[in-house]
Image (cartoon, rainbow, N blue to C red; front, side, top):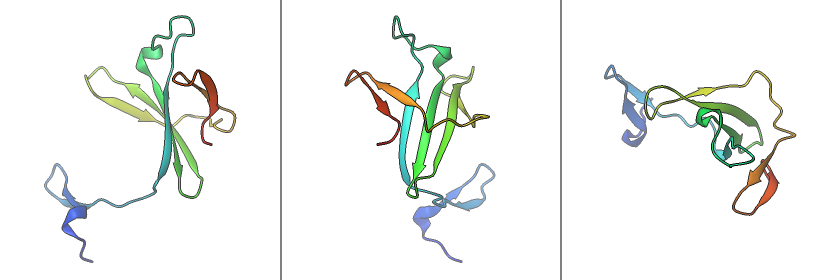
Length: 99
């Protein structure tokens, strides 16, 4: 099958690949803060929730590596996204992950 040039890319080996859309949706990204100082804790660990157009949610930890500007994405062993609320510091209130 032929694909438009704008969806084709080359990998490190010079082979042509197609950028294929798996899902489109919305996301929630949060980090972990000390409740007293509000400074970032856990060495900058973050968590991202991805919600596709069908309402399916995937979650990943984003872990900084020792290499500057590099991070590792890990799936958690257990998922509890139905019960999570996050702090919105701009509005000074807690919020559901997705509303």
